[in-house]
Amino acid sequence: MRSIAQFIGTIALFLAVSLTSTLQAQARVEDAEQLVVKSEFTIKNMWDHPEFSKYVRHYLRESKAVVVIPSMLKGGFLIGGEGGSGILMARGANNEWSYPAFLSIGSASFGLQFGGQSSEMLLIVMTGRGLQAILDDQVQIGGEISGAIGPYGSGAEASTTSNMDADVIAYSISKGAFLGFNVEGTALVPRETLNREYYGQSVTPSEIVLKGVVGNPQADQLRQTLKELMTKQ
Image 1 (cartoon, rainbow, N blue to C red):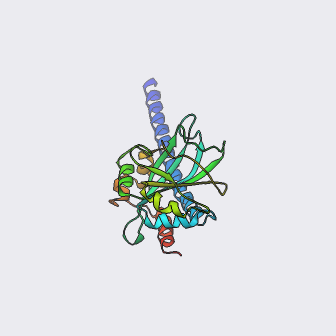
Image 2 (image 1 turned 60 degrees about the horizontal axis):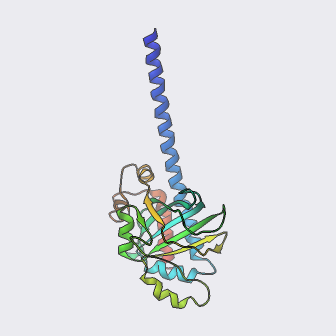
């Protein structure tokens, strides 16, 4: 009887662990899907922003890729720092956009001074060097690649040309207002687990955004929105 009870207990434990693992995987897929949906809203917010939409549009039309972070939270990545989760998408021929690769972003001294508020961030990747560095693995702005804050407002025209020398140009808003911030020291780290759960297999960011070995129809609307914006006046 004891051995039977032990056997039943083992089976019950196995089923409980399997169920927990399945539920966790489903939760990660839902997290990824929410990031994709929210990223579309962030891109639209940046595209139509009253202070800097003309510059965002200019840079996006010249970009190699974008990193979209729908929600940056203070203390959300490192103790005493800021961070969040986002997506990386590369722009191909005829303004076709790749499927998203998921990543985390954060810094111990990010310089965003907005208390417990959240913000939206758009990193416009202007160079192939910048894109490749992000794809290779963990990368730091100000280290492996250079970053600049995007120009905005009156008198910003002169900055449009000079900032094109940066690998990454950043914009961030909180409750609709532009945030002054420092991108130096910001780390971008692939989220391997989220990529695996979203696409159903282990894939690298490069396989997702450059080689196109996987896809997920859930991201097709986001890809189409980006393509349509590129031809919008």
